[in-house]
Length: 95
Image (cartoon, rainbow, N blue to C red; front, side, top):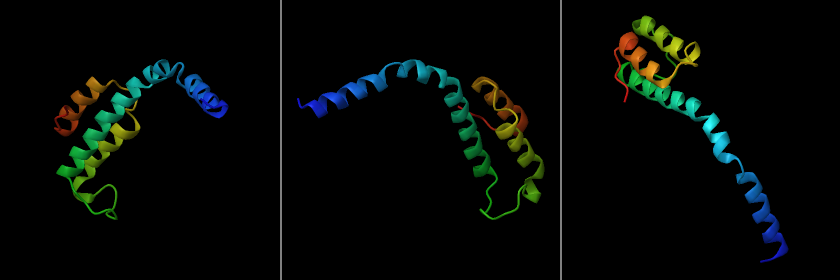
């Protein structure tokens, strides 16, 4: 192995140290993002619109406002709570 390859290997080993701990810190955030993404996809499948349509869409003003609350105000809740609120607030089932 060349000196350059050894340096690269050392740098990669150093960058890998503690990566599990760092990923664990983001586990909740990732799970929340997955649920919010699923909610958004299902919401827009149910309420399609063109990219340049106004926001909120006049026909969906009430539910658009609820979706906005999910995406802006309820960002710190647990994924299980997102699932419950999606059902109760928007009648959308999340996995």
